[in-house]
Length: 251
Image 1 (tube, rainbow, N blue to C red):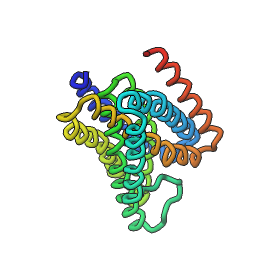
Image 2: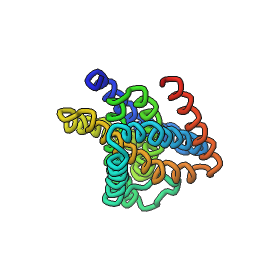
Image 3: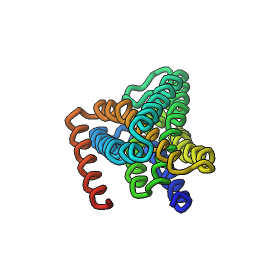
Image 4: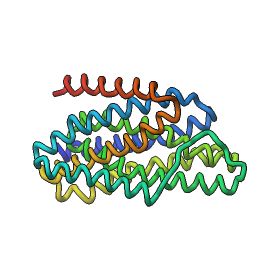
């Protein structure tokens, strides 16, 4: 099953990363989109990821390797992404243009680099979940793709404001998104030779921690900044409800 899911896992991570470029295209054609829709969408993505992380991934890992080991790998996933966030901080679009073009351009390049590095563990998450269960990999890829759209906007807007070149700014957002399938390839090359039930369950617990940290550190604050907490909560509840129905139907 793991080998059979290899190609679909890579395709899903590529499509999720491609969403960063879609965000760049949104900035290309619509410089100031209505961010309230993104607030609801990001809330929905949060609901999907939190529900899957706790109800399915962590519970499956706990049954396979025990509560203590599952807890340790879950915390390790959160800690790794936290350290990555501290080493390579990145910001998000706030709609405020810096009049100093050189500074804005450097900031846009650093933001693009930061988002690219942050996409690596997301690619790892989509790949490992898809390898374990493709039915779970698809909604996770969709949730991360929704999350990647505003990051593409965040890459594109400061570079466009600094250079006036929409094509170049859009291209950089696509490059940042391609770090996602790169993360999947790295994960597969490193783990696949050693992949068995215990390693896969440990990796799934680790990925659950990554997903939960992304939700609380990025998705919820960003969603609230684009709209308000009520819109975010509506999307979050909808995401949990949809995944509840979907998992009940598939299991």
